[in-house]
Length: 181
Image (cartoon, rainbow, N blue to C red; front, side, top):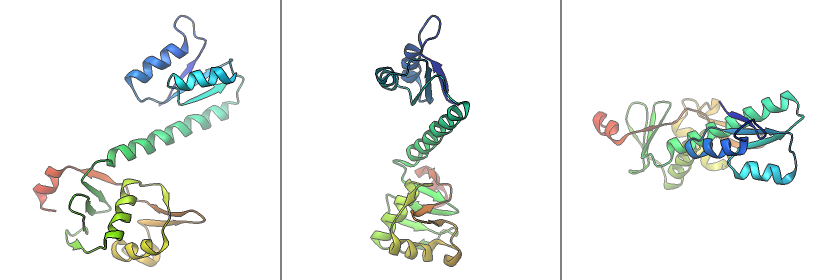
């Protein structure tokens, strides 16, 4: 949950608290204040706030901003969780980034071109984000989708591109070695 701070708190001011929270955690911070000048907003953001809202404000706007910082935090967590992992898993499939191998849910190796592997790796490293590339997406779909005509793993986003939908989990090298896949 985000930390919501008022700049003008009694005792220690919100900007000082913001700097202290940011130094110890990645908790999202939203600053609220009656001071809505550009310099005040800039200072709040430079101290580590993720968003800044001047009073008076609509409570629905505050809720929308809370949801926005939570979405950004979730996206950053997903990206950092998969970043640097050598094996990623999705819907029973495993992609070994180091060996450049794809294994189906039964553990069988699936041959892929270099371009197909690179695109699938990109999807795995950015789940839930819209990406575009028409021809390679359909080729990967034919290889990993149970029914390529009714795709569930790589969804088409109208006027946007494609989104890799399964939850992707980093797998430790030790776990891969232990089960042989």
